[in-house]
Length: 290
Ligand code: NAD
Image 1 (cartoon, rainbow, N blue to C red):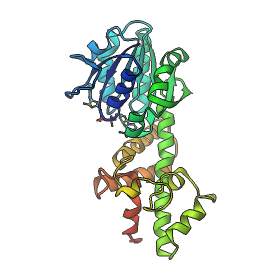
Image 2: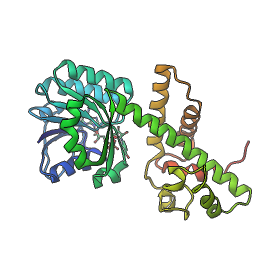
Image 3: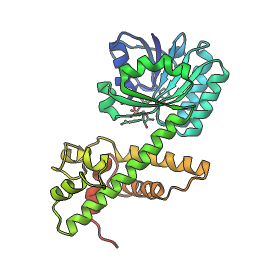
């Protein structure tokens, strides 16, 4: 398949490389000077999109997506698919999709979970919003870049699924970390805490699969000095997107807001920038109630 790929950063680079390895013809564009084996680099986003059956974007945010979409949509052929894999606000995803559909294209928002490791290993999960026809065309690409693609409904629903999932994750990680710090102060061994909670009603992905306490449970960023993994900065981005969406539709999300405020403090005022999002545990360890 002829594919245009715009945004070849930490995630987009390895995703595009996997498409090339699977035999697809990929033309790329990035603002930065990027070189990836087997990918022909174009001089502009529009040039990368010309003649492509699918144009994939993997960009930092909704404003940049809107700018790139303005450029590539007029360059794309009728019936082609604009497949955005970035994490952006629901509104931008829906506006860009409407613009693409008005130009006779299929549009999909397909944010991912799995991080840089998942992008390199081709094991991402895609949460997809958009029309069935586009989903069916993109399915073989999802199979190469990931292990699972869930069609969540119309445009914007992929982004909605992503931010709802990460709102649960952020709040759950904080609850897990504060509970560990409380257990420490109560004299409860961390291993005993893990053994109980991981098999009781407090269990979660944060506790069972990504335990924030070093040396406990399966290997996680806690065992690697809290190197990400999933950086606290990216968690903050997703929590802000969930709060922005909640405001737009008047949804009451007090736990999501508390998680967002805490990660903002951690990343912007404390030492959380560049650390894994589970480094909330050493943060709580050091604190009292005051
Ligand atoms: P990144 O900053 O490494 O890559 C973004 C790329 O886009 C950069 O190479 C940049 O030069 C390029 N770019 C910016 N503006 C451009 C423009 N106008 N035209 C062309 N290229 C442009 O970021 P990343 O980590 O690859 O993340 C990409 C997206 O994936 C983000 O939306 C992020 O939230 C999401 N995401 C990241 C992770 C992760 O672990 N890194 C996990 C899940 C989702």
